[in-house]
Image (cartoon, rainbow, N blue to C red; front, top):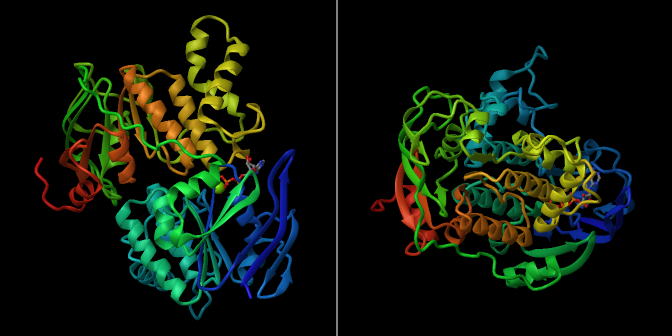
Length: 504
Ligand SMILES: Nc1ncnc2c1ncn2[C@@H]1O[C@H](COP(=O)(O)OP(=O)(O)OP(=O)(O)O)[C@@H](O)[C@H]1O
Ligand SMILES: [Mg+2]
């Protein structure tokens, strides 16, 4: 008997059918992958199962008994827990407080037992191989670190069914490995895991079964161990996929667009890995990758280049001129654009329409011409939506109603509209489906052909090797290696990130 059975589940948002007659089962001790394009209905289906979406049709049974969840608390009582795609931690609370939120340990006098909380959190983090101080504020943590906290929190719930919606999208391969060890242990103990991910290589490694959704319906089921990535991608998209990477290799790199010499951010903040000696160049028409483990300083470097306002020493040249971006506005004037890894801080106004969000970036430009021609705004936005294949009802829909991956495409589209010289990208394909990833890589290739330079931080080694001309490896805030992708592969990158000696 399946542990959980979902029968003919349906859920619509206005006119959009997110799930339609979906049957889905979960057995104890299995890792069941749930796959599908952005907007296919994966998160919606799982939010039904975890009691987050309650106005759905169809039935749920747990261990053979029909249940009706009215809240996530109901589902949790039935042993079902979910790690959400858009993390739902409280930024103003510490790691330990977040993990024990609502079930804090008490002393004999019924007061909060902070000591026990910190100790138990430290234990939990150690068991799951996570290196974090329980007392740190979650709001100060990087997206990847927040993901680790959510995972630890979910593990501590001792759920019978654990739903993981893109738990590793901001983790590097070493952290993913550790996560997988934890998952394998849970599985041996009989926990069922529903695993949602756009990283196809992960599915083959941990999943037993895979179900593919397309437009809200189940279109394929696989034994995950003999499913190929191509088969899965074809089922997701409904047609064979073109080759993923349009490897971009410049024959003749242009002039130096960005040059950084020995960049150091002296005032180190607790827990952050600040740049401690980074040198690199990006030429026109070049795509340069930034590799490194979580905490290697990739994000901090990009933020500093974009004028995050921290004091730093060293030199930075843009187009041969020495510059020191004072703030993001100044950096944009210098021709830089930055897409941060976290959508929530990337300036997307979730309550506003897709149109308003994309246009925010070009409004300056349009306004300079005098009037703001609404027709052109709508046209530009539609063009971007079409090019990136953003799935939405209309361009007037609020960004909040888009699926996670489609929100990411909006961020990307908006950036392309500003026509910058240099793109600073932090995990630009995080949570984006295979089809859209291919689109984004092509767009990057096109941008490079037009002479734009790209500095791309990514924790997906295949992505770095597939799209970059060169990859700079950071470790502990320093440049430790530089590899040409024509001569080096994923294994070399990993070795360099982990600290094995690679000649510069
Ligand atoms: N709160 C909401 N309001 C309106 N529409 C929504 C809402 N949540 C989801 N949708 C719509 O339902 C459909 C399915 O979305 P869902 O988030 O389940 O997709 P997904 O498969 O998880 O995609 P992704 O891979 O991008 O996370 C999409 O068309 C989405 O726009
Ligand atoms: Mg989703």
